[in-house]
Image (cartoon, rainbow, N blue to C red):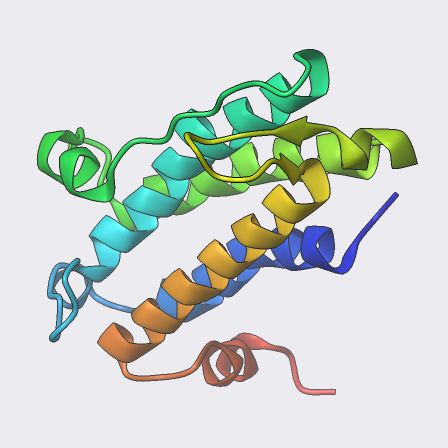
Length: 164
């Protein structure tokens, strides 16, 4: 079963690649008024995919209403491993992990979308709601990247899309 949010998640790795493929490393290393640089945002998306998002969905599918915990962004940024900050590696790692996640989501049965989890004292949420949150998380970081780089993702995609 495919949802609009799943389609958006599937598109993110391509959007990121179009957006940053021709951007020099020195530009990716600047924050341009944002809290994080573009390369840090890309690394955050990759790390969140591997460490948080994937594990959350997998736990929700096998444990009844698990208590989920996520890494605070500030502590992640301060202690993260910067040895793989080359944009090609970050993009490839993210694309590989995201493709695996979208494949899992595409195979979910309707009742699996309704499995729940909780975080702290917040209300329970379903896999569907979590995936919708995940898609908004992607969109927020793509918008940050657009601000830093100075162009919209659609403009970047049009530059590299073949003429029809």
